[in-house]
Amino acid sequence: MKILVTGGTGYIGSHTVVELHQAGYEVLIVDDLSNSNIRILDQIEAIIGKKPLFFQFDLCDEQMVKAFAEQNADISGVIHFAASKAVGESVEKPLKYYRNNFFSLINLLQAFNSRLNFVFSSSCTVYGQPDQLPVNESAPVKKAESPYGNTKQIAEEILAETCAVSPDLNVISLRYFNPVGAHKSALIGELPNGVPQNLVPFITQSAIGKRGPITVYGNDYNTPDGSAIRDYIHVVDLAKAHVAALKRMEEGRSEGNYEVFNVGTGKGSSVLEIIAAFESSTGEKLNYQIGPRREGDIEQIYGSVDKSAEKLGWKAELGIEEMMRSAWEWEKYIKANPFE
Ligand SMILES: NC(=O)c1ccc[n+]([C@@H]2O[C@H](COP(=O)([O-])OP(=O)(O)OC[C@H]3O[C@@H](n4cnc5c(N)ncnc54)[C@H](O)[C@@H]3O)[C@@H](O)[C@H]2O)c1
Image (cartoon, rainbow, N blue to C red):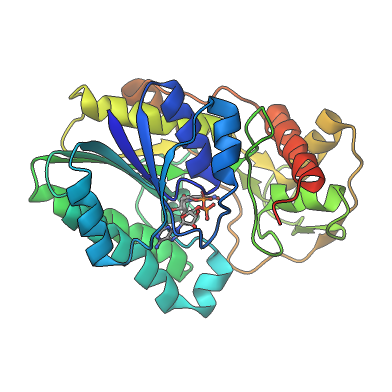
């Protein structure tokens, strides 16, 4: 089975390429390297013993996508990671986000328009601050806090509406919670662009001396220790959920041709708990301070994973300690072996 992974040299994409290979799939990557490094291909090769087929182009280029689809008519599935993903930047440059995230999606759907299994990278941001926790897939989608969040909501609508008139198209949208950690080899991991906006890459960069103290944004939330709560998921578990989604579609187990699944652990961890887990699992002491709440941050979210367990047959296996340890091993690796 030939699978196209868009954004396959990125953080989640590279881990998914490894899991797909291990599950016996042949993988083709398309990435324009706008937010990743070509050396990731060597890193993947070092893990799986084979360099995946790689094509560098911008998926917003309609003619390129069309020609690629024609030349690779035997592709049976697409996992679409490629997107712009920085929430803050999306507020400053909304058109960049609407252009990149929609044109790439629409070009792919138009080019691979028949008999295709398609997995889309969605996000728990579609829930906003949910009314009930753990939040399940039937919870209402709340008004997006940013253009980035809006692209995920509208992309889900584009997919559902396209599926309604395309019986041969099968789509699963995976709503990721907070992906963290790195492959156990420490050969691939997250490569944030500039100052990390997410907690765990900031922690590892602070611990290695690349950044100053960590700021805990708010300790007055209505949570047990006052800091905000998220559902952190190990990126390797997340990668495996994509394999499970493809298998569900290939085996004809989908209920309707458009489905949505949460991909989290079902457990929330606070910022202060993550800091403590990092310290205890790595032996490193962190320097942190309490700051005011950050605009746009919600108080707490964690997902119900019952539907994913029952229907995808997938469940997260790796805990917080392993997430922290692997993120730290990767940070040390990249310091010792910088990409540029
Ligand atoms: N990392 C997270 O916290 C998170 C959470 C929820 C959802 N997501 C979604 O998951 C997907 C993957 O996220 P990630 O963290 O691996 O991001 P990433 O930036 O590491 O990977 C995305 C890859 O897509 C490529 N790309 C972007 N636009 C492209 C285009 N027009 N043509 C070709 N390649 C293009 C980039 O170069 C990059 O390699 C994204 O859709 C993101 O929105 C991520």
